[in-house]
Image (tube, rainbow, N blue to C red; front, side):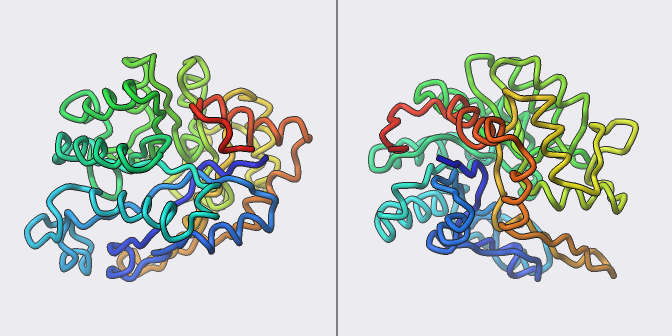
Length: 323
């Protein structure tokens, strides 16, 4: 068994209309890409932008509520993904572990009600937050967004939360996510993207029994270190390793945090290509490159970060899904 712990399905209209890449992925493509590299199961969630914002605003990169197609964030996107998994592609869907994506600050009670309705129809295994793109603070979970923690507790669901290092990103700082996790030790949390290699965050996470981290989009984050981009921690705050060799970095992380690391590709966001003012930022990778990083690990450690650690985080009620 090999679980890819971080994948997106669907269409991101913000990325598409603004001219950014990637912007879409479907279930058959994900299964085909992953199966070539021995992956047997996938944690999946919808793309990040949603129809509670105006598509017209997306063309200029703005988040505008006026002119939105839907009132409740992710009500359409979560249902659409579950129907794709369970109705359109049920054979492939058997190997999907869907997470419902939520906005921790907008229309939180209506979102929670929509999730209750979905829970009566379909299985899902966790909740996901990507606050940076939708500009919604993860600390909203300590306010009106606490309804999602209530559901996580009631249904024994973990949360995967996008983390950021950029100080101007006030929505998704690793320290804020860890503050929420410390305040709710009975709920399981996974911080995505290796906390952008910020060693203090990784060490703090390692001391919390209810926290894990995933290495999603690992290769391009290593590339960002080599290129000196500000999306990752600077050298004096960074986990020490040879970032010219992503396989070595993954091995060093697995050695340093053997019980905490989960492997995930972040498909299709193992690449990111977009215009920023007059410049095109191009960070390109592939499913093959993400999977190849596992080749540098001993078999026991590879199994740990693709299976046993992930199962501890998921704590699934029905392990027959993995038969």
